[in-house]
Image 1: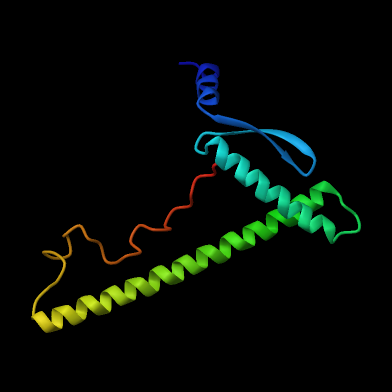
Image 2 (image 1 turned 90 degrees about the horizontal axis):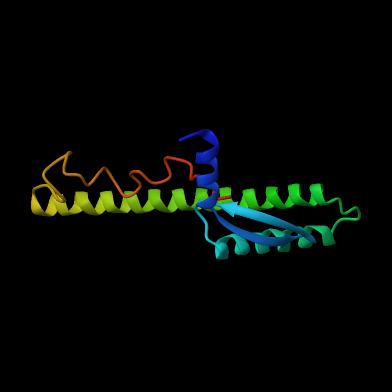
Amino acid sequence: MGQLAMSEQNASAQTKAVVRIFDHQYRIGSASADTGAIKKAATLLDERMRQIAENMTRRVPLEVAILAAMEIADEVLRFRNKREQLLSEADERISRFTRKLEDETGGTVGGDGPNDGLGDGLADGLGETSPKPRF
């Protein structure tokens, strides 16, 4: 199949929505998000941009958009760090509990050994790869 045909096929598989952000209308397409998710993300961005613009004397849309993106990115990074911290704490608790069970039962708990398919802990495989952009 030719490059153009593949491109047209990929474009038709995308969900498309028309959204309004900071008084501008945009047509957004996504291969992995539904219309509701697109509109929800656009609403979040619009609200954040309006909050930022209220505190600015000069409301240049690009500057407002960059500040909104920086705030949202900061939130995402803080939530990722918190998730990693919680996963690490949960993994440590599971390890302590497993050791305690092994001490009390005198044997191994959770499988036949290192290749039992259970992994080394709760955080195995989580957060190791970056999520694919949805928009």
